[in-house]
Length: 333
Image (cartoon, rainbow, N blue to C red; front, side, top):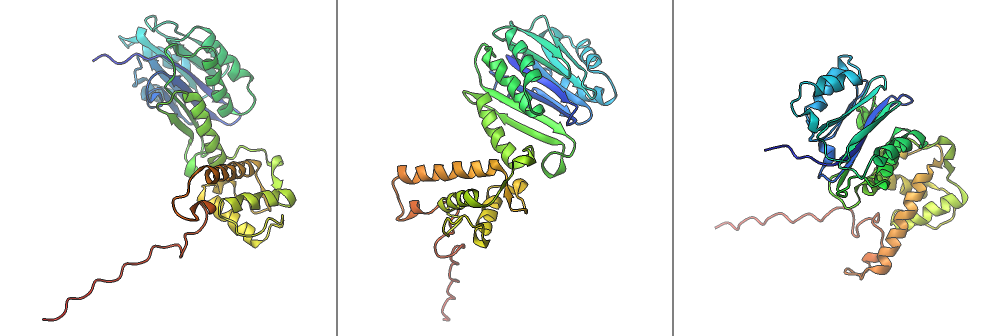
């Protein structure tokens, strides 16, 4: 059976400031993140699409690892491929040199634009403005490579994107030791099926950024005192973590409640021991407390008193389930 040919727009990029390599992609093709993006720290990044030859991923990374340039990798992958005219490929190497290939039989519109440290490519698009808009967005968006890759996807969609519509999106970025547990997978997020996959990807990324990454400016941290402390106490109280009064004094009970919230919501990466808090954590707490308030006012209670206690409240009657009594021994005959 012939491989499926799917419309896709993607960007491969290298960020020398953070020594990161990554790919962002959107397509009217389910789970596109499982096919298109490939990247390796100190090696480069690859996007293989159209009638995607998935071997281009591992084979291309091997060639890059051996020292081949992006242009050489494109040539060595496509020349021996009898189906090369149906393929599309974007490559950026360890030094940030980029190259791309669009086969003559890729479905219109198909093409690419190569820039300094990146390449944008797409097929079955509304037109050349899609990759051109992606390139301009990547070049002009402030922030690191993560912000710029997501901006490129949004720009491509604003110019029409895949002319059949939207379905899946992904961002995959590698950086030495920056991933979970010290791994190199800095960000690896996918939306496999969604009516607005880029917006959903950005929503998921926002939460991932908040909990797993350390990209906020240290100059923005807030001392936990006064109105900031009172706001945290209020929101922790609404969520059931803090039983005290909203005094604005950051006492032991407040710290204990906050530490439990941080632990239960996977915010260990944002925990501080200097009496300050990241603004993003304050904003997240406020949003969660507002959602809890809406839940209480808009949901009919099933269990008496259930809606008056936040999700962080300890179960009534203790924190563990009661143990079953031991089985009775049979009476002697």
